[in-house]
Image (cartoon, rainbow, N blue to C red; front, side, top):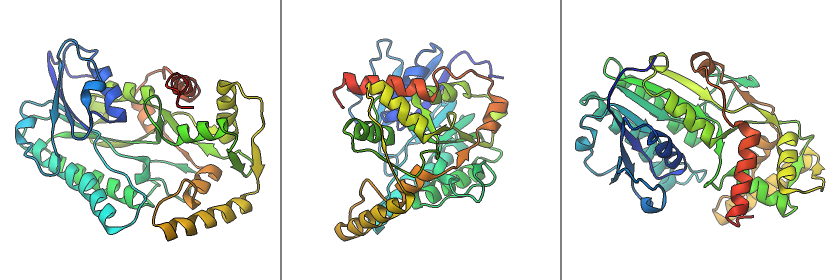
Amino acid sequence: MLLNMKKRRILVTGASGFIGRFLIENLAKDEDNIIIALYNNSNVLDLYKDSDNRVNWVKVDLVNDSISNIFLNIDVVYHLAGYSTINPNIKELNLLNKLNIFVTQRLANECKSSSVKHFIFVSSIAACESSDNINITEKNGSPKTHYGVAKKKAEELLLETSANCFNVTILRPTAIFGEHHKGSIFEMVKKIKEKRFVIFGSGNSLTNFYYIRDFVDLLTTICENKDTFNKVFIVSGDSYKLNAIVDHILTCLDYKSKIIKLPIWFGYIIATLFEVLSFLIKKPLLFSYRRLHAMTSKVSFSNKEISKIIHMNVKYGVLMGLTRTIKWYKKKDML
C-alpha cells in the first residue's frame, strides 16, 4: 500500500547514469513528485528535457562535498550511484570501496538525521552470484568478485545503520540492458552483426537479462511500498537460453546466417590466452574465464520474492526489450 502524500520529495543519486535517466523520466510523470537529481561527471542538459522545471539537478561529489543540506525534507532516496571494475590493482580497489561502501554509509548516516522514510538501494546481482545451487535466491548466494563483495558490504552497512531510523529496500538486478547503454548486449549484437560471435558449448546455457524500462517501472512501483521495507530482493527478467537470445538478435538484424559453435574445452584454451595477454599488458580484455563461464552457465536467479509482493504485469520483457534496443542501435548508427 502506498502512503498517502500530497507532495513527495525524491532524491536520486547517480541520476545522470544509465538507470538514472530512465528513472527520472518515469518519476517526472507524476506531478506530485519533486525530484532532486544528483550527478557529478555528466552533462545533464543532454539527458532530460524538463519543461515543467520539476527536476532540480545538483552537481555534487558524494565522497568529498558536504551533503547535509541536500537531505532537507527528503521523503524517498533512490541510491543508484556506484562504481564497477574488474581491474584488481590497489588504486581501482580503493576507488571501488570508496564509491560503493563509503558513499552508501555516508548517505545512510545523513538519512538518520533527516526526514527520509524510504531508502531504495540499487545494489547488484554480483552480491549473490556464487552458489552451489543452479537456482540462486536471496538466501543461498554469495559474492565472488571484489565488486560483489563491495556491494554486499554496502548492503549490510545500510541495513545496520537504518535500523529503527528509516526503511530500506535493496534490489539486486541482473544484467540490465537497453537504449543508451553499451553493455554485454551491445557487444553481443555488434559481434553477431560482424559475424565474429561464437558460442562455446551447446548454447543451452541460461541468460539473465533485465530490460531497463521494466526495471524502472519496478523502481517507481515500490516507492514507499511498506511490503518491501527492510528486505533484499533479486530482480530480473525471465531467463532465456543463449540460443534463444542469439536467434532473436539474428531476427532483429534480419540475418539468416548460423552461429558457429565450438567445444567448451576450446573456449578454455582461448580464455587462457586472453587471461595471459591481459596480465602482460595490465589491461582487461573482452574475453576471459568470467565471460566464458557466463556464456556456459546454467544458473538462474529467482525473482519469486519480489513477485509475491509486486503484482504487476511486465510491460516489455526481455525479447521485446531486445527488439527495441537493437532498433535504437540502428537508429544511432551504432551497428
